[in-house]
Image (tube, rainbow, N blue to C red):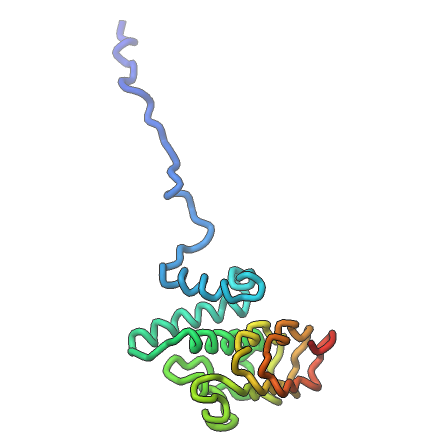
Length: 197
């Protein structure tokens, strides 16, 4: 009878969820971003754990550094690995200690300024030796939060680290032991717990 005419022809359509259509848990990073992320992760003291946490100072510094790298590239500014690491260490310090609320932060995280000129205290020559950062002086500048381990990335050059009279807490990172050139660590009158490494 008529019923046979109503038979659907062909096999049922399979609706397949291909993995490419599945929502991805993290936004896809460009190859440039991936490269920078693995460069920083390889040099991180926690294997890149903090970098992968999108609310960490390290992640904020990574995003800033990505912009910074693009700015340098677009403006033909030399961007050697040492510069990249210095700017990463300092931008992590900025984010970890609430840099937006420092008493003085003008010039900080400026893409078109050498990190040697971010400091308001002293000339670029006193902060850097040629282009190697030798001195961080942020005494009494309203820093809050904790000192990040990333400062230890400056182990080849940092001689003076002055962070006293701020509102820093937490433990001093043991990684600061790696600062083999360090002659002065001034972080007195902060609320650190634990021994100075």
